Image (tube, rainbow, N blue to C red):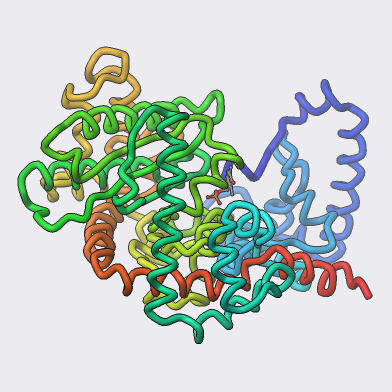
Length: 468
Ligand SMILES: *Cc1c(COP(=O)(O)O)cnc(C)c1O
């Protein structure tokens, strides 16, 4: 994210933290001295050609100064001053090397070391899912508490009896969650429904809006009798928006409007339910995650550095519907791609699309997509303002017109939405084979050992800190 590569103006720094700023000046001077000695202040071959066309000659150093153009580049300072730089999942460390911190990788290749994130099985299995923990311990003993790789031994122990037991536990976790949501958020969800869950910070790149559109597409298809064999599904969201992030708040409002429509429509509410839980936090996560059948990690490829809730869901035996992004890739490689639902453009395609992307054309050429996106402005939902003038219209514009600070649909929702809807229908269909689906879920649990934070921390200790 551009916003994560913080840049602070010199004026702000000198007025708030003048002493710190003086130290930054000294760090920058040292960097500039070192790079000048290496010839980085000379114009590059490309710059020489550009200079002939009248452009200002660029040097390698120009892209690397910590203090440049009136701002302090925090990521540059961090890279210069650190022993190591970690992208927190394999794909993202590669993106840092190839793109984000390219010049720095060339200068300090040995600093760039991937250590994929992890989560602790003591909280995200032991404490939050005692029922599944006991099931596992009965089969393979309790070594997994200290060594999550031991879960691999599950694979050979699973037959129909174990699969049925697992489905019983999943049902119990869904029933417990249903009771909690009823009490906490006053919505009833039938635990016999399939639970499809997206919980994470609200951000455009995480594409909760794309999930909302897919739900509207399913809603229309159900209304028109086009999905006669649809497995009843509960679509569950949890998220908070940053205080000043108006679009994020508009997306929350839109999803709540969809919930209001769907949950009160007798034509569909025996087939689907939508709920956006309030005050999503770690305590809520501990109740939600064990109850998932499918988990949504649908960020635009290249935008989610790792993700960690994908790991929490994996350990608890949910399949991921997701893009080829962040730790999803390593999750699919460990559990087997056949045990996840991967869709959408990959990083290479997204990078190509950025050169000339026309979401308006996609919108005009796909009636279902147009209809679904237009629910933002067709007067069906209230955003609290006048139709066509409020926050929902602003979301609509962000997809089709863009804004002063970004081109139209900069997270490529229209590229991925049709494929995403079809993938969702496919999961829904696969779920009918309850044993087959449970096997996929259990393969996720069995191959989640790689995603223990014990492994991450051990790698830090041995490979970076050189602890003996
Ligand atoms: C794990 C966790 C996150 C991180 O979720 P991602 O989907 O990886 O972004 C955010 N919030 C809470 C409460 C969590 O438990």
